[in-house]
Length: 59
Image 1 (tube, one colour):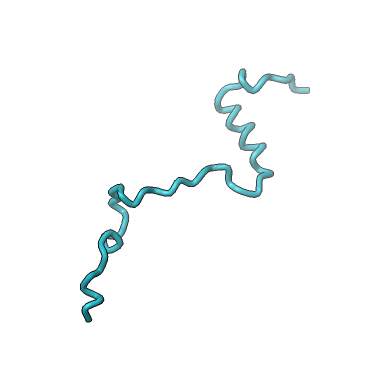
Image 2 (cartoon, rainbow, N blue to C red):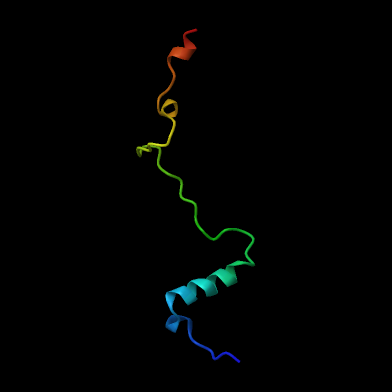
């Protein structure tokens, strides 16, 4: 039988494994999803999304 070891005394790798095992029963992901600010520069974002298309309304 395995001896009880407090979570604080476990290695970080062991703590992560223990947390991962406990999360398997959750119905949702515990990771929070932060929405990026539109003001920040993002190289991967489409350039057409950054500017309003004023020329399309003329036609």
